[in-house]
Length: 161
Image (tube, rainbow, N blue to C red; front, top):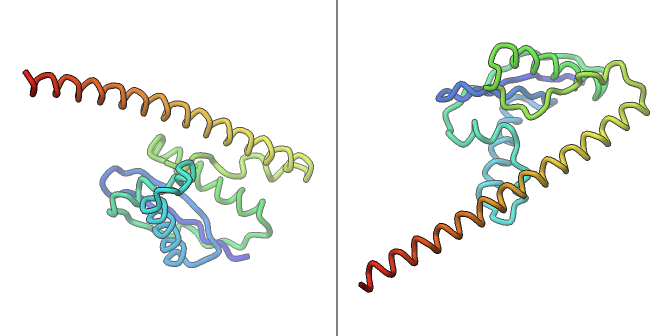
């Protein structure tokens, strides 16, 4: 399979996202933008579905570029190659690389059973991270509501005095 490794860089913040696709970069960018618009426009959208690239797309001031076109043997090969470039960009940009995880760190040397277990543990870890984020958001929302109620009460007292 012919694979395109690409990056998207926010021209304002310098943040970078590295991805891969079998599509043309133009087609993949259209998908990214459509996913982002659907995420923003659909109030019922799963909020945990936020992709690493969304903060870059939000500002609508970004540059996308092909890093490499690569002939991949299989999905693991794709992940290993994408991970290679993510690590290269992580070394260069540090925390400005927005990818949540670096692909293919160990996959090349794993057996099929080990890969299955790895993916199972990754999914479990992602679910735990989502629960943590939800708990923080719930606490934040509760705090904002309490502060808003207090401000409304203070305002009402000031108006009626």
